[in-house]
Length: 298
Image (cartoon, rainbow, N blue to C red; front, side, top):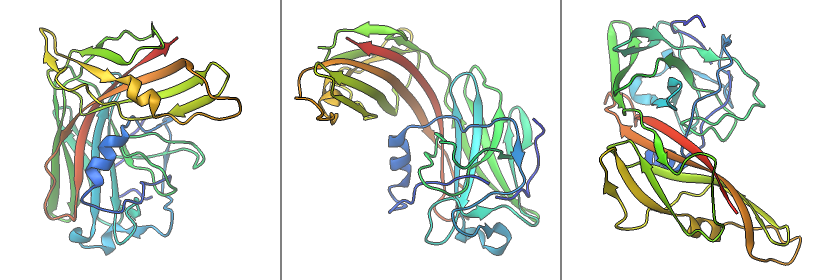
């Protein structure tokens, strides 16, 4: 796809309306993340939940940027969004002489607005939950090691730089994707090729009990205390999947009975925090390596 330099203008969806800026990074981390859908097209404008605010009309200390780099091992992507005022969703479009660019060891490149339907569900590192504006996107080539990234908001002759380093890629070595474990399993052993333990361990469950009641959910999985250990190839630890299954809410179409089966996707995220330009208001910046495997409990 052709990359465009800002100014581009706002089309898409937005961030959750957070109740506290102080809690914002923690909320996002707990949600998990992924790559924003990017079909290869691009839109000329953003579409905000309410009226988009032109960036040129705002002082930088009135703008709250959200900068994220995310990789699933196959693709890597930088995402940027801006908000202002009492609405913490993305509601600011880059316009006028303001511009946005990305600088890495791969060079300097621009951002684009992804084309897509507003009805499409987007799962991205910023977890868009309510109507608003999609993030600006910039595609990267995954690398074997860490990748320093700098988001540059340019206004006139001034560059506002915020930096983060994408963690080194890793693989989940245990459990193997497609593994079936006994339904009575309470604890799941995990091993990965990362020297750093994941920041977030979560799973998406789809379970059925013996009588046909069902439950779904995406809880965070707790690490069993004292189980984290370094290995020759990375780290290993144990997750409490039994606790997560116990916390699911089943339908009650039939009398409740023992859980018969669960299909789940385990997602592990290694996250690094970045350094924001202090001339912005309450900037958040982080980078994530995300890996997942599918499992069955029978």
